[in-house]
Every structure is written in C-alpha cells, then in structure tokens.
Length: 254
Image (cartoon, rainbow, N blue to C red; front, side, top):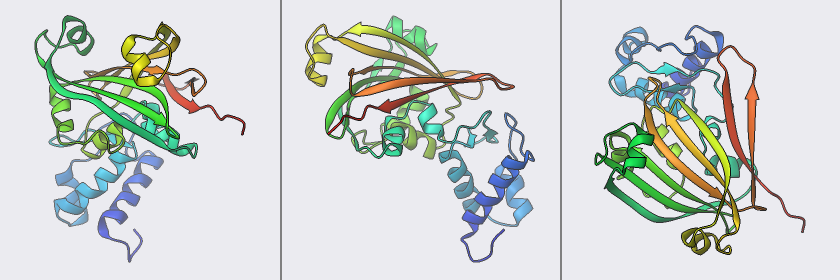
C-alpha cells in the first residue's frame, strides 16, 4: 500500500488489487470486516470506508452484517448496467436532471406484489420521477422497492440525483437486473410529464433488480421519449452469461 494516502484509500486500492488478481474470486464472499481489521491491524472505520468505496464502484455488493460478495462480470460502469440515468448521461457529457412527482410508502397492489414477490398489501416504496436531459423531458420513471430497501430511500431527496448511487453508497445489495423492452402509447400522465401528445409511441423498459441471493428488491417501468434517447442492449459470451442494458442520449445536430 502507498504511504501518504489516508488509510481507507490505501485499503480500497489493496482490495481492488485482490479482486483484479482473483485473490477475491468473482461471485464469492470477500473477507468479513472483522477479519480485515485483524489482518491490517486497524479499527472498523477505515475498513468500512474502503468497502463502501468498492461498493460505490460496483466491485462488491452486500455487507452490513454479512460479508460482501465480489460481483460477477463487473462492468466498467456498474451503475449504468443497473439502469442509472445519471451515470450514463454524465458519461456522455450531458446534463441529467430530475423532478419527483411521488415518493410514498403504499400497500402493494396485486400486480406490484407479484413483481416484487411480496404479499399483496405489504408495504412498498413507490417513487415516480420525470428525468430530463439538457433540460428537455427524456423519460418518466415509476419505481417500486421492497420496504426493506425502500425505507432507506425515505432518507433520500430524489430530486438531488441518482437513486442507484445513493443505494450503492448505503450498502444496498443490487446485484443483477433483467429488462423487458416494448412500445406503449403515452397515457394522460405521460403526455403531461413528458410534453408529448397523448397516444404517441413511447419506448417502455421494465426492469427487475435482484440482490446477490436472487431475491427481487426493485421493479421499475421507464418510458422514454423517442428522439431524445436510445436504448442499447449488449450481450457478452462469458462464463456466467449476463446482459447489460444502457441508455444513450441522442445528439442532435446544431
């Protein structure tokens, strides 16, 4: 470890090296906080900070009472792979924005309960936002979280930025996501929020996010305005097959 850096930064660099070299194998549990504290002769504070850094980078998931898990097929921008509008817009040099229209604890409807694999009537968090790209409406988000995860978002101002980044920084176990793409007609709510005619075509992306144990933690529906964004699905032939979905802003000629 490089001298002169804060301890948590040196620990984070060491942990990254271990992941890159395979000392901490992908898909396996990393050492516990207690064992890392003993190994490096330090308190839990620097170890937790270092692990939080790796968690924010998408290199590990979980923690908070159990050993973190090294992610399989770690993407270069993990938040993008899990559907973060803020991450990919920033990568493209565009200005993301958001306006929250609803954030509430609600009883799960039959449909949402089935999506989240909870009982109908169980508490879930519903979050709705209109996302903008360089000030123009780009998509409407409708997200539902299991209450175990959603209760953390009650401490988050969804107008402040990325939900994914907040959850990852808070140690949420967001391990994998699957997506379904289709076209739908704009509803009255879509038309109002996205400034498009009612009935006009929108691209709908439905996403289910699971934790490292395979349990569903989020269900969402995003509706994209045509001509503002495109959606790219990238598949890679690897040992553990995975699909990555990314959204790319459409650049307009001046």
